[in-house]
Image (tube, rainbow, N blue to C red; front, top):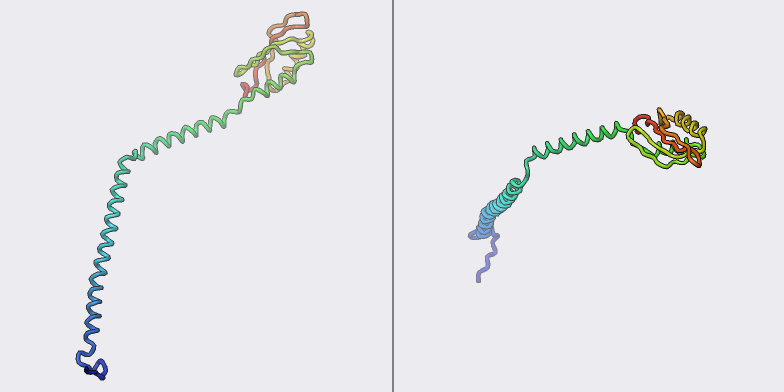
Length: 174
C-alpha cells in the first residue's frame, strides 16, 4: 500500500476526478432544468387548451348579449313609466270620504245604501225630519271633500223621511 503525502494539487491527477464529477453533475443539471421547464410549460398549455375549449362550448349556449341588453332597457323604460304614473297619482282613499260623510250626518240620520264611483258618491237613508234633511244638505256643502250636493229624492215614511242624495268628489275621489 502506498500512501501519498503530497498535497492534492501536487499529486498526479491533481483532483481531476472531483472536477470531472462536478462537471458531469453540472452538465446533467443543465440538461434536466430546461427539460423540466419545457414539460411544465407543455402541461400548462394543455390545461389552457382544455379550458379554452370548455369556454367555447359554453359560449355557444349563451344568448346574444345585444338582445338581452335591449330587453333590459325596455324593462327599465316600462318601470320608469310606471313609477312616474304612480308618483303623479294621489292614492285613492275612500275611507276619508266615508269618514267625512259619517261626520257630517245629523244625529237621527241612518244610511241604508252607499256607492262610490270615480267622481261621485251616492247614498240613501232616512232622516228624522225635513229640517234634518235640510241640515244634511247644508253640512255637505261645507265639506272640502264634496261639491254640488243634491238630494235626489225625499219621501215621507212612518219614522221620518227616506232620502237619496249624491255629491261630486273633489279631485275625482283622489
